[in-house]
Image (cartoon, rainbow, N blue to C red; front, side, top):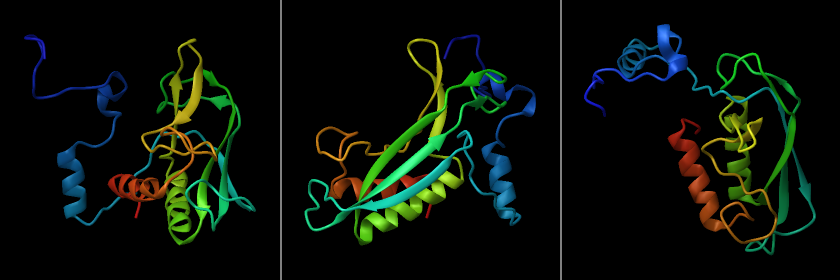
Length: 170
């Protein structure tokens, strides 16, 4: 921190004037008083559907595949987005899970996270356009293996459950 900054309070510009989330002290007090609130993110409105396709994923040769479809219409950003009042482009994305017991558990958690608006967010890309991207929970967007964004593996299902749990999704 610079010498002119106080270590007592740090603010993001959009959280000035009390418009941000409650402080940790306020959150703890609310929880102590029995006022639990559902964690909610800044994902734009969209739709999540899924289907079973008759094809296996690498590492899951005996299972069909859950193909999860996410669709977002173009819209106008709200105060929770980077540029309120500005438009953002629509987007259609898909992710893959094995159609087995663990895959179905992760699907249920992803659906809960989607409904709480935690899976996606609006960011500004390198061209200066506001676009919809995944949030802090990585989705496997290819049905083939490879890098972190490729097909899911056994560790991915464990990691997803842990990440979702860390985000309050149980």
